[in-house]
Amino acid sequence: EAGVAQSPRYKIIEKRQSVAFWCNPISGHATLYWYQQILGQGPKLLIQFQNNGVVDDSQLPKDRFSAERLKGVDSTLKIQPAKLEDSAVYLCASSLLLAETPLEQFFGPGTRLTVL
Amino acid sequence: QKEVEQNSGPLSVPEGAIASLNCTYSDRVSQSFFWYRQYSGKSPELIMSIYSNGDKEDGRFTAQLNKASQYVSLLIRDSQPSDSATYLCAVTSNSGYALNFGKGTSLLVTP
Image 1 (tube, rainbow over the protein chains, first blue to last red):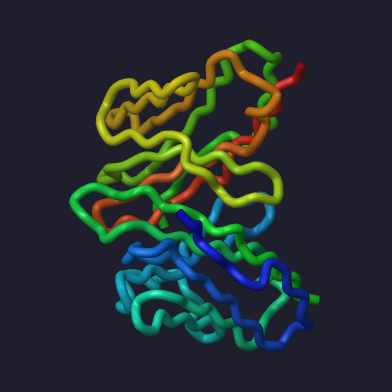
Image 2: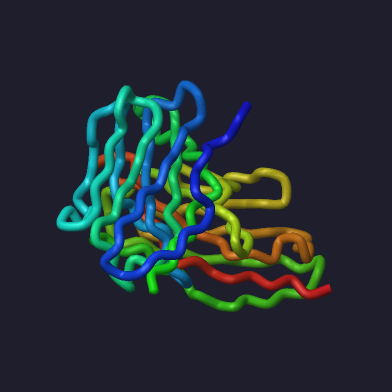
């Protein structure tokens, strides 16, 4: 079974530039998550989708971050404009449709973003 | 933001010893608890989940949960150098299933 795919793996940009990350979840996984992991910290949820609807985006800095999941499969996360403090690894995870008990989340390899 | 607290370490144990990793959480309605292992430069990998009070064993790993004390731990028996990694504690509440992570504990197993 193929895992969660993410691209690019690395990205270096100047502050105030824009950047986009792509995620393809495991086939059949209805729930998709984007996490931000700053060096030395645990991952922090940015946004959670179920199919193509947003379940939780309370920690997404909406003035500069946006995300979409068209057709309930692939997802893109965009930052515009980027700030120095956005330097982090952006992790995508997916799980089966939410049920009565939480399901295992499978993480992709992540995109390491450096903002100069 | 509900807190998940872990000692950042590093925790150093000799090969073959038991490594004990601890985690406390502040949200009393937390229902599900997970331990993830993260090697340097890699993404988190689930190693244990626990939902009810008590112990849960899987191979060399044992997760322990005490909801009254809001405490969850992970024991690794017969520690190996390959266990050297950062161990992340994660908790979910009943408001959704997104994971709330601690900062992680760095474990070093020395030969």
